[in-house]
Image 1 (tube, one colour):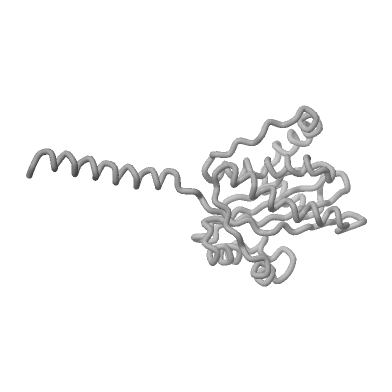
Image 2: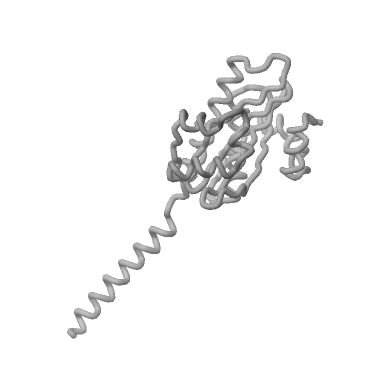
Amino acid sequence: MNPRNNAGLRHLFGVFFLCLFSAGVFAETSIAILDFELNDLTLAPRIPAEIERTAGIKSMLEGELKRAGYKIIAVDLDTQREANGSFGYLFDHSDMAAELAKKAGAEYVLVGRLHKPSFLFAYIMGHLVRVSDGQLIGNYISETKGGDKKLTLKGVESLTVKIDRDLDKIYTPPPPSKTIAIFNTSAAADMSSQKPHTLSNHIENGDTR
């Protein structure tokens, strides 16, 4: 065979394998974000403003993950409601959440909740489930003060950091403003001193001290 032809074939094979390698390296990890549920334990539960804030968490989280390079998979809301059955069902049953996300074509699914034990603060909670085997691989809690949209977004950014840490490690949150950083310093220190599953147990049992 002509040496020039051999060189040309080697070049073509090299380009082909390089393309395959690049496709594998830069393939987007896909994740479905389910609508967040509101668990409001205050004396004036489920006011319109709090319902609106809870509904907005999903789009905030999708925006942060998409900006980092994740592929967001949509799950039909009616299908989600049908699968949920009752409050907290998908949050407590990772296998069913995985089954729902698998039909949509996602690799991971995030089932979320806004837990509000007080007018002063709330917890953005998330369960990250691997769709292939229905395993819970991440249990996250981020505290947010009050109901201000900017502070809620900071809580979402904190949640995104935790999700990304267990997946592709490609997310860089925006730098915090000085006002928000000072406001959250003591809370962040308190939150970081407790393991997620321990803190989650305290929250679910109504102990928010």
